[in-house]
Length: 178
Image (cartoon, rainbow, N blue to C red; front, top):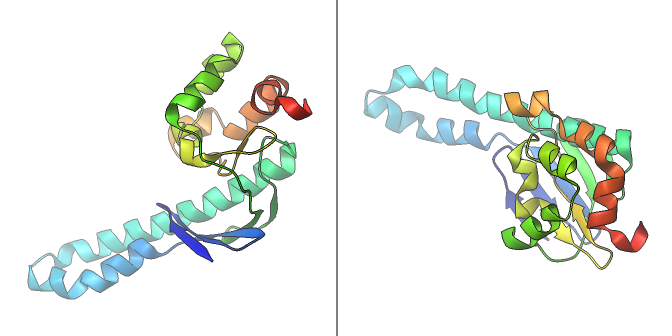
């Protein structure tokens, strides 16, 4: 079993599934450092840091809800299926393949129609990082595809992008099943 710790989620990989948990790791980090903060006279920052940690947990919940919602709305073959989501945890299919390089993704993006490329640059940049993709025998799929929580993400949700450009993305990313 493999694990991974992202900014807002802790991920457990089993043979067939991936479990993505909203995480309290920022909160635990602050709690662990309280004695040091008090000793250094930084106790006034404890509450601020704890609130920041809980905000991170909230973002993990938002990412899980967004990812599950994106899957439910689109059922796109571009996305690795999310079987279950309740905010605290998402259960997703374990997708095997290789992580593409930045250069490989750029070449793929360059094959998209101009308007699709334009809209691609409006979505949350986190969605377009190589670690969020998997190269499979059929083509390229998204393994991490939440809408994000930044102002940019709220104006140009990833889910809407997938819905709008599904055909163009599918023809480019997974031509074997288009």
